[in-house]
Image 1 (tube, chains in turn yellow, brown):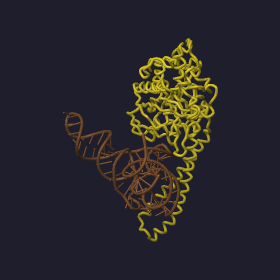
Image 2 (spheres, chains in turn blue, brown):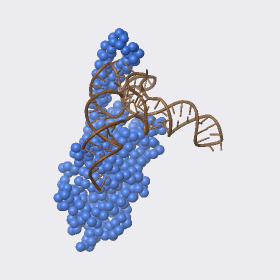
Image 3 (cartoon, helix red, strand yellow):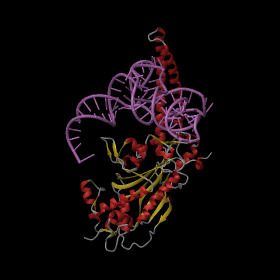
Image 4 (tube, helix red, strand yellow):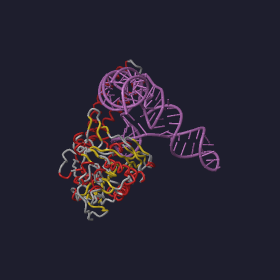
Length: 432
RNA sequence: GGAGAGAUGGCAGAGUGGCCGAAUGCGGUAGUCUUGAAAACUAUUGAGCCGAAAGGUUCCGGGGGUUCGAAUCCCUCUCUCUCCGCCA
């Protein structure tokens, strides 16, 4: 039996037991490491301890049943209590051992990354990502293009200096028509998503620890989130976190799948230690706006749904008329919980750089397993669902590309046709 | 912020130390009846873990304690609701 071609690859304890070499090889392809043999040993110990503890408990329960039928305070009863104390103590001890063994196993098990889907190219890092598609002409002449942060009126409309004064670096003010432009993009993205069948939700922009753990932000990415320790709340780094957790610890009906949702939220990222030459202007911010698409699917259709999701996102860039490329991320560059991931990058003609504006991912059952999101299979038994998400889209970098690519000779920027309905003006940055 | 009440299965809601994984009702599923449907009736219907299976075991908000034995008693945390105060 070969899981490679039968099932979407998931990290399931059964797979680990039956095909440890396969799992070992799959993990070696990712940039994460974990000790499979140690985890298997913990699994063996755990199962033995659980069996012992349950046996002892069964004995105790059987004896207790007899106790219940004896008259209280009778000599037999009192005699039996003494014997029962020993049984109870033994049972309790084994139970503690089993619990400890189970926790040790669970902890190690959670450290196993999701396995890459077979369609994910094997590679060590970003240099080995494949270009799955390109659209538009990035080599075309953009005679007026300059980096957006060098446009003369840029600082007057996206005010970084005052953002520093009020909040800190990476928290700019969008002023006047630029604020309206952001709102236009949000409206455009949400409306497009709605027409593609995604139901809009407006989620909390803080989450608790359980939610952040379920989607995989905790424990390893704790440093990337803003946290309020008084309340135990985290500012969300993406709408993926609250939206995916919508169905945490729930069992869905198979006929309601796939569930497709979209959400606009601000996103907050500390980006600790990642500031440098390439992060000027809108390229990297601590707070930014984004519309996110999230899907819950059954185990069979998640890969097909990922392709649809990617298509939905591509359509946005096409309507915005921004040249872009789609990267099929390789095993060494996809994240810990990812099975398959596409990154969409727009070409910013002023910087002459590709800017990542979307990441579309299939997590298979990885997040859902942690989050306890299931659906009823054809036999009525709960099955772990699959979750997917994709940015559609991250606003600042899209805005950067629009500013650079659509810059006119007179210093104004042409508003893309698809946004004019929301903006009610054809140009921004009109000279004062 | 102050005072009080509460947290039990998909939902509602019994249960105050052993016969309780848990009554009853609703809902769901299957069947009977019907040309079909509704109604009525009958049966069935939580989840996790160990196990090839038989079966076993855990779970009554979370954690800890008392006890031979806990949904039930004690401690603690979290959350919810009601009233008062404050407030967009």
